[in-house]
Length: 308
Image (tube, rainbow, N blue to C red):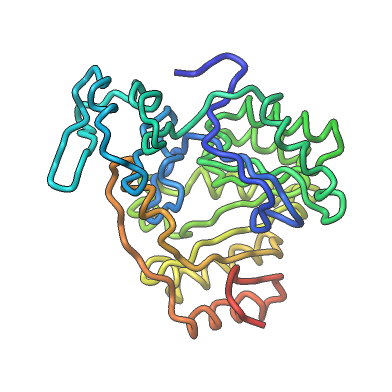
C-alpha cells in the first residue's frame, strides 16, 4: 500500500564509495520489477514492508511468538522460526523483540526526512566530488518519490546519481536523467531469453530506454554502465562481445563490472526466500573481459579486483 508523499526506503548507506564518484550517501528504495537470482539486496525486491529475522540475534525469549496474531512464529529444532505461509507482515513481533532479531525491511519516509541524513555529509561530497545516489530495488518503482529526492538534492547543490535497471517508465527516466549528474545503468544480460531466465523478465524495455538515453548527447555522457559478472550466465564470449558491440554502436564509453558475491545469502534467509548460488568468473576470464572492453577504447574497470 502506497502512502501519499512518502517513499518506502529499504536503507540509507552513508560513506559509500561504490555507487558513483566520490563519497556518497546511497538511498535504497523498496520494489523492483526484476527478480535477479543473484540479487545481493533481495529484501528490496518486494514493494511492501517485510519481516526480517536475524538468527544470530535471537535470544529465544519467545515474546515474538506470544504477540503474533497469526501464530506464524513456531518453535523448531533450531529455535524459533517464521512460517512465511502464515505471516502477513503485520510486524507486531518487531515491537516485542527486545533483542532486535525481528526488524522491518522498509520504512516509510518523506523525502525531507531522507534529506536530513543526506545533508549530514555535505562536506565530504564537496571535497570528494560525491553526493546522493538513489538506488533500489528499482527507483522507477517509486518514480515520484525518486524525482522529489532528486529535485531537493539538486536545489541544494548536492550532486545526484541515479542507479537503475532501466526497467520502468522511460519518460520518467529520461526526464530525471536530464537533471542528474550520473546515470548508473545496470546491464544484466544482453540476450533477451537469458535475461528472462535469470531475472523473470526480458530486456526489451531496458534496451529501449537505454537506446533513447544514448541517442541524446547530454544524457549519453552521463551513462555509466554497470554489469555483474556471473560465471556461466553472462561471462560467455557471445554475451560479452554482443554487449561490447552494443555499447560501441550507441556511443557508450564507460562501464564498471562487479564480480558475483554472496552478500545476499543471509538476507534471503532473513526474509525466508530461496538463495541461488552462483560463482564469479575465474580471474583470468575477468582479465580477458576487461581487455575486450578496453581494446575499443572504453573506460572499463572491474570493481574490487586488483587489475591494472
